[in-house]
Length: 146
Image (cartoon, rainbow, N blue to C red; front, side, top):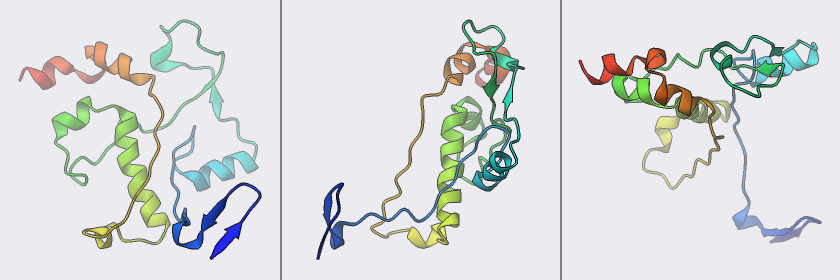
């Protein structure tokens, strides 16, 4: 069955369903908290740049994501060493992909051996250079040379 729309025409057999969503936003641990903060006009920006104080051309105020250092590596079957050197954005991608499945009412274990596609997106992280080149932040020497 064809259902033409002004934007495009897609056969019903080829429709895409977005059934779950997850994310982390400034001063908001999830989408619901982000919505509450926006609706209550909470100021989500900060002039405290923390680890970016040394970076030139920073805007006066930025939004920061909380708890980027927290990650349950055992849950995702990732070694502690790998989790420590992994970009925080990649760790959050694992967490939020799982959360989106739960949000959709799906038990992730039920997807095993099925023809299911889980499509995600990620942005380029500004923390990568900082983490790779600043051994004080992640104690690379301790991790790699023990």
